[in-house]
Image (cartoon, rainbow over all chains, first blue to last red):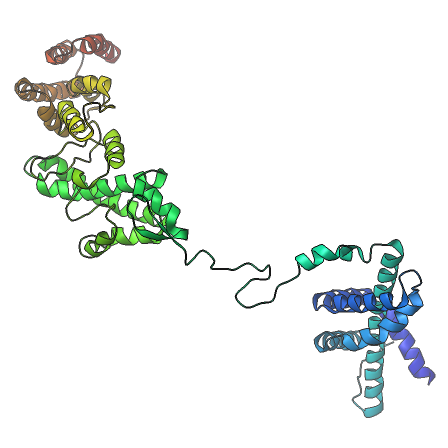
Length: 95
Length: 363
């Protein structure tokens, strides 16, 4: 489905070019810190590190442990708001 | 390139939604990755566990989650139930109210004397005007309205400065105060006025340093006017102080008192001057009636003469303004003779040449 592929590519390009991607990233970061998600994740990290040992922890270890939990722990309100904004962007600047 | 028609048909819509979700997932993964990098760097640089190094202090300052206690473990109402016995009035006072109570009870501290004086002044203005009306008709007419304004203003300022309780007691003066006073004997009883019997020595002393304090024969109350109040002589004030505080009583401003008895006469001369210059007459009557009380009988004979001549002086000034220089000599001489009649001669003589200089200027 190259049409779809091209469409996606265009959308992504537009997102980046217009700075919307950065804005969305920043918005998400702020919202996650506000709602306590970041502290939760940090606490989880501490457990992982204590498990693996302070000296031998690698980025890969952390990513593998953290990402699935992180994805699950995002609160619904934050998720909904972000989806809304993306949809709005697409509707406005559709390729 | 535009995809302006957003088809709501099934596959496209789902594709769009899928796209939206994909973008969202990308963003979330980006956030997670950022967090991982941050944590990993902190671990490797050694500052990740920095806030957990001291187990002992961590246990000490742990957040407390018990009922009846705040998160630091402190009890809120700890001192509420404790009572202390006041050494002065021998009453049991709540601990949090003890310090202010002592301040009022002993009559020390800034606020207590301020409140006391204010209450005395406002109360005695009321009672004084009621009791001594035959003496002070003129004065009271002026003071009554002014005093009412003062009282109103003072009450408003009382609300802000003192605790709400005090302003309440000031508001409901006559009726409800009786009940509140029985519980607080050191406060002033509005119904009976400021009687020196109920005051402690500290309060009496503080009162006497700022107020006249002469005890009226009719009502047995202390005068709350200033130290220079025209209704009482300094002899009376001294007598009261001796009576109340003992023969070692200090702090009558004697030097001022001597000057004061003169000042009742001299300002008349000086006000004559000002009147000649600016034609201001209404100040005469209160000072004259006041001076008639303070000074001895011979001033009464002087009074009418002065009044007549001042009117003459005024007329002459008016004429001078209109007519010419012919009357100036006459008016200045009459003014001079006026002033020479007053008892103290130093100042009037000095003022005489100034009159002539004024009229010289006019000429």
